[in-house]
Image (cartoon, rainbow, N blue to C red):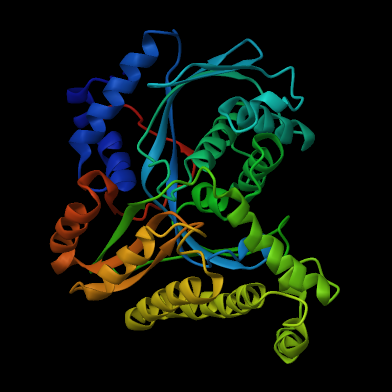
Length: 424
């Protein structure tokens, strides 16, 4: 029996209900409305088989600005996603119609870098396809209609969701799901770095491709060590609060963190801080301060300490030590504020992130809080006791706007084809 995509049929489809619950939590009816609308929009433009794919947003639990220096992170996929309705095409072209945006159509016989495409979706599609071809994998055409509730500018990595989605579709349609989640993350990062033109680390793509809560050690970026962890602390609600601020002119400030860390590493004959002896670094600070800014030294200190915090949190989660886990997350936030110094943009006195963090420290029931993502502008992450979640939501919504406060759950599925099956 063919799958029907109207709301009523989806709600009667046990596999859909199971899938939607796993991905989004409780509001299955809202999910059914979203899938129905997307399938309807897709059918207006293309005939043929319909397959749904999903790539989540992500949160960085801990490991702030460590991945680009071969460090360690703990990250998680969350319950917002880029959802795609897909039909395979015989032609060698990929067409993506994101609802509310112009159509992206890419001839995948041409995988050269187009400078004019940098910073856009065309570049990401070409970059993913190029990485597939370079690794000996198959590529092919498809038409995708997409809708996203991965909030742009909220530190949940909408561009990485797009890259991972394209990778998941190509893997499923043309490679028999033979490519590991980690390799799809590496492919996605290549597309963002080389074709899109953004010097990101690998954490965003890994969190989304892997799903769940993931410990990732990037000592060898081509073969990162990955461990899935069970987050069993169900008595708290995860919040991301978009505090405001504009990322558009902040690229130099993001890049400076990496540049300053790597400048310190080169002083010890290494390209990355990961390979610098920590004791030697601390013993050399009197000499380093005569050559480098205090900020560069502080950022290196943050790097070493943050890697240690990742390990402590990893063990706390394994052992079910909830109090220690939240203490370590908050300690990471303090270090980002004081040493990494990415909680406010240079020359901007508005400082929305410090304001939000100060409010978290004053509100009852907040178990842990910290800057989220790249920093300088944007979002904070908070873990709030369930009993106080409504109060926290109400206060933050009153302060920063209702549309800027996001309640989330951690989802275990990475970028994937969704098995909606047939009605049972």
